[in-house]
Length: 351
Image (cartoon, rainbow, N blue to C red; front, side):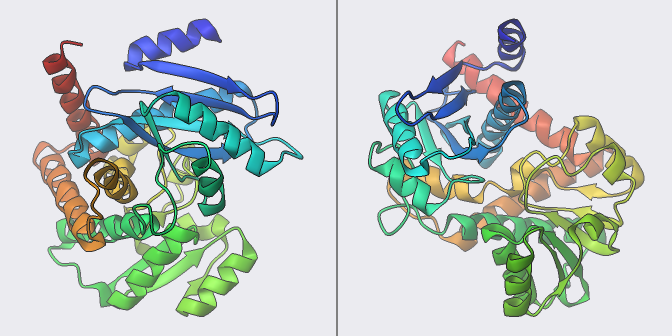
């Protein structure tokens, strides 16, 4: 696996990959630092039960690279990274995260941690006991991270609908929100407030019923979500939802959600384009928490959530405009824009 790893690092321009093991807590993690040319590498901690160490490594690398792309298109002076924590039975979660905090502190700020799947406020508090290099929960931190991400997706959807039909017109729109966690439920709330018809899909039945009742939205079986005719399908749970099989079932005119790495392969973005489905690149839309966190860490200010949303909407509008002019998929255009910016950074830095 090490030979393949070094090949992947060279091919994709990674700076460092670290395997971490703590004897006391049993914590096992992988940290991929993709780029620090513009500044510290930011990326959340994903806690997940992977089928193998190789699957964990592949996910870590792909997520870290996407973070750098996200930073590049958001215009931030930072880089991208990702830390994946391998979920193991009977672990003392608090001890595990405290050990991770010590590891992150030892890097001296080269990597800045934040929330991701499996890492919420309780885990961040445990980390904060051992490191200063993270987005702290509560009043001392950047706050409103989920709200910032949801705002970016909401404004991005509006830009996509404007590109499709020349008007947003929320009361005429149906949106399927796939995943009703912190970001998905906040996005659903925003859409309901705007007058859209919202259909929710969530694997956790208790959470689905609670959010459905609170927002008074329709619910659908998560397996059926791609098949529901709608204006927008918003994947807001785990990535990898658009693949060879699911792509053929999608009944939405547009895909715009908060989940990372929604496309299993870049080719799937091209196939959506060929089918006439407008795909909004996830690393453009879901940058809200990153923007909020980076600006807070670097400048000590909490950028207003609506300003972040408008910023992301404008970035996506530029991507969609170029894609339409060049008759290419937005996924390819966004990828190319990010890669060009990163190459320009490295050229200036002489790397």
